[in-house]
Image (cartoon, rainbow, N blue to C red):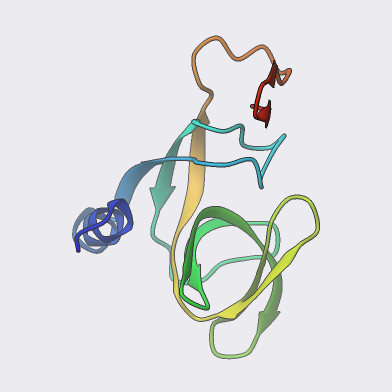
Length: 115
């Protein structure tokens, strides 16, 4: 199955840059749901970088690097303190965030919660 992550990784490998839409609230308020992200491929990543990665079979389009071990192993966490785990599968770094239309910096209450 060809996913948006497969496309993004292919673009990063071929051109060094890709765009992805952020889905979810795990990186709020830094990255609101539905923001458009521009990612670029780098040789290595630093603490605090927001990266596209895969941890324990789960994809994250914009989680934080919160720890670094030798040989390119990175600890990945969301913006609310949850540690997802360690991985070597880091594909690119968020270099630009375009907020969703009509974003006023506040979350709206909906029937299903906060959006």
